[in-house]
Amino acid sequence: MKINNNESKQRFSLYTHQSTIDKAVDFAKKRNCGTSEFIAEAIEFYSGFLSNQNDTYFLIRHHSNTR
Image 1 (cartoon, helix red, strand yellow):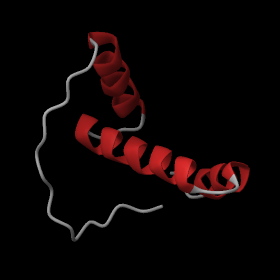
Image 2 (cartoon, one colour):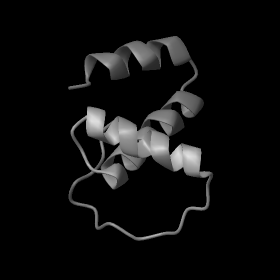
Image 3 (cartoon, one colour):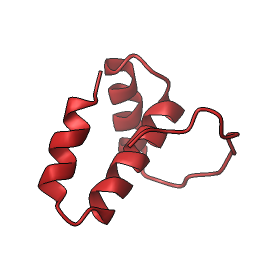
């Protein structure tokens, strides 16, 4: 699943635990991207995972498309 780079971005608030924010910041640094980009990619990944009838296939396909 790929994020549409032509789509305009919208701002929204997220209320979560500090430990969740820390994880997002840490993984964003490891992936060499911004926290917002990491969270957007994580949402796209998890949404695809939940909506796919064969989750194993989705994981294999998504993993082959990672950097």
